[in-house]
Length: 404
Image 1 (cartoon, rainbow, N blue to C red):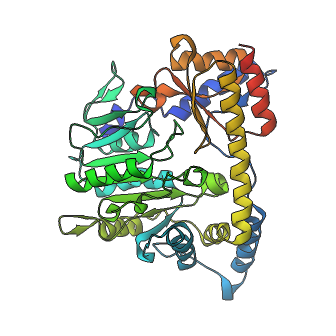
Image 2: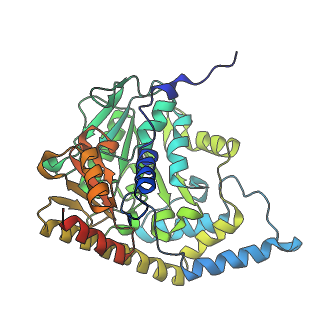
Image 3: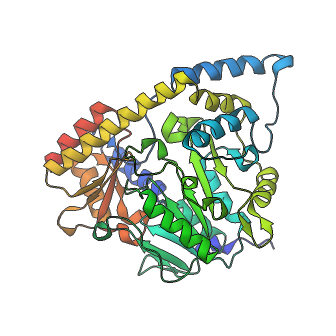
């Protein structure tokens, strides 16, 4: 008889956003007359930039001719895109990244789940808490998290690093030494960041402990403060201890077209083994690359027109974020984030549980958000709202919340 991976059976319930989707669908079915506004799932709403659309059309035309047709993409991704990434995302900030250290994929979420394949089961992971649930879930699926303690809503073999108002949402170096450290900056869900000085401490710590940092920089394009680095490789020594993941989803609206990349420096080693060579083998064998058409669209993001157009979209979302942050603050809510990321993190009123506040917003205001407890134990009593809605719906949602 075939056997299953019973690590999946340890996972609590369903994926956070699947649970939200089911609850919202049930509410809409019972209340078809209600106009539900979603400020929950972090999906963009602005269309792809004109420069990107033109690149897509041009690439489609190329695919229609035998002399310009493209089949399978190279394992690492097309050189034209990797070169654009190296020049614009790194060299422009004083960081040298080699082309064979850039691995193009169909998104940072895929890479976050797949990167665990190159690490042994007996590694201990550390996560900032709260944080994007994919990090913990993917490690749980591969048997790295131990047992799930339902009463504490946490895993026995995971080091949780609380990020709360009391420590300005900046994690402290853990007492127990981890092997793999997950850092998301700007953070999803809190919207907060690490200064270069704070991040340098983590890089030095990881090198000292021979740990690896998996650094999620999916929201780096939203950074507005000068003392917040856009890449972990702006810190001294990061190439020997850090893997960086990026996405085109939030900065350029590729949630429906799917494109991302991961940087694995050749200096990053476990003993004599280069993680770059391991990831190259994994990336090539279990291919999750992006098609030629999509990679040409990604290249267009780095054109002068593409940069200007995507900058306008980011400014649009951050204006929404400012309106939500200031609007909620004026109502008396305690709010965080919304400065370097399109997320607003608020304390629930009167100590209300996160899911109870979700139900209140949905039923009384017909507004969808994300319960903080879904991001980890320290998220209880908090709630996330996104700035990815339209300006009209964002203002309408604030008016409804004000009437609660």
